[in-house]
Length: 243
Image (tube, rainbow, N blue to C red; front, top):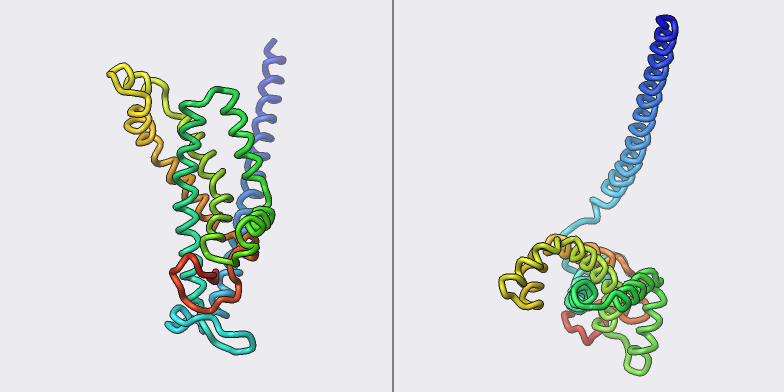
């Protein structure tokens, strides 16, 4: 029996050493991979900074883009245009997305909720260029390009992100909070507005920021809905803008 116990102890010790060795090896490999990724990113950032630092000036941020064939120019019109597009898209998508999420999470029947989630997921996976072509056919043909039409296309892209993120956060709110508020005599809407929404505010803001970040990086829908050659700073959403 003593011999068997000794053999078992030796086998266990070998397995433990092997496990520790494998863990150490994987930690080293993971560290090397992480450092390699950071090094590549650092090289790209340093290279861009070294080559582009000389071009940064006050004129670069305050002048409009130069016409084709001319040197110089700035990005003032593009910055203002991007701000107008994203601000309008956020104003369109966020309230509607939150209302959709409230209905799906708090009021809809399971069948309607499942159908709404499916539609939102399909819309979220739709290529942005398809949305741009749809808005082009719906709004641009016959009336021309405008900033608000580009914002409408971006709002369609943002809508499912805001709605799904808000809906998932609302589902995480404990049912005891709802039951406690309603037990005190609060109506369903008063419970949603006074208890559920404030509890979910952090998650809603996170989903909104992610949706805004995606909209700010989209280009395909804007090719069809707003100008890519405008070189004047304008805050008028009825006019084409550069982005």
